[in-house]
Length: 464
RNA sequence: GGUGCGAUAGCAAAGCGGUUAUGCCGUGGAUUGCAAAUCCACUUAGCCCAGUUCGACUCUGGGUCGCACCUCCA
Image (cartoon, rainbow, N blue to C red):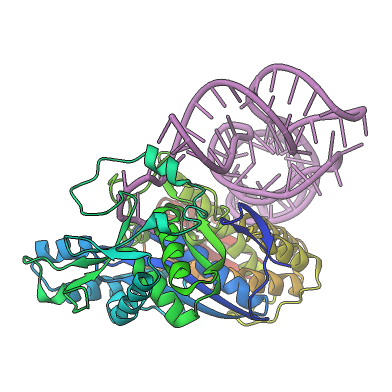
């Protein structure tokens, strides 16, 4: 039985889908005006893991991850670049897909773009207005009247009074209450036609929060199972989504809210505003994508994850141990996902129990290491197959071990032909018992980052 | 100031009221022409102070420290 830590309840709860065997899940995705950083990588990988585990558990999953392609930062960046909004967002949507693909993230079932759902957003705003929860202010913006919604703050655990107390100085606005947030921003003279839509409240564009409410209900319905995102979205974004969706539809919006922890650098949140972020593509120049995925999954999704080269190096060595076990097994495990898992075996039971306990991937990965030990000890085919299939559930260990071991190089290095030639030379030296020469070659290659391993099957090599 | 989360060995990171987490690093041994890989054995824990208990890293209370949200942010 799967248990999920539900932010709404502040505890782990048994997961019961609304429709038996079907799960509807929505995750807040990227605002596409720049390259994704490691924080984005974590959301993508974490919810990809959730998606895979739900499917492996027998659920039919409908997974939606939105793309925000209209927003202040996008408008600003497009103006700076002197390019159209569309050209800018398309470029970064493509870049995001490249990064996600590299990290082994499966495509969600739907990736709705905000700009394609403006009519649905307007309809929802009208509904809120009918329900007395929205009003148009003097400046033309349509705002949500937060105090009119019962239960505002139930997700983030904030009371209206607490929010009041911590209020920051607000820029000039015609909101009736400082806590109100904007649903529809009136168009400004200076803005391009591209960011203006017609509406009964005049030309304008949607506020940030309304897109998720509108797209989620359009694709998944007014009430669905899981909604996820980074911990920083808990407030105000998700709180506002609840206010919008429940205020418009008069029914529960989401049953389980999941929030992943931050990626940190030197114990501080990695973020655009702090400027301490690393883009995914930057990191992938140095580290294998699977190492990055493994690094993310080796921590629990709700814990903070500290990024550093030392930690990535550690993850690389650990993952190498798993691949080494696969390589050395005879017969080698066949590659490719899709093998059926025997969920009755002891290791698989442990793996499943861990995953069912709020997606405890560190524990599940520990099972993988125990299996690797099993493989190394008695070359049991079942253990090898299990190692590969269970890891496959996490999107790991699906490559040919040789390719992983030969490819995990830091920078450049010798080409294969050269390495093979040196190996041949060393074998020849060994045949004539010229061990000095053989050792010289080994040392020479080691200095070039190549480790030679002699075994009954011959000499193999890998990069350090 | 308000709210929430966390504190585990040299590093990273889990479970668990009593019995080996796991990976890296380190030590000893096996194996190897020498190595690497692997195997076996082992060393390093639970912020502080009280309390509950036969027994607490695990529960309760207090303290200290760290982080996050309250403003765009995954």
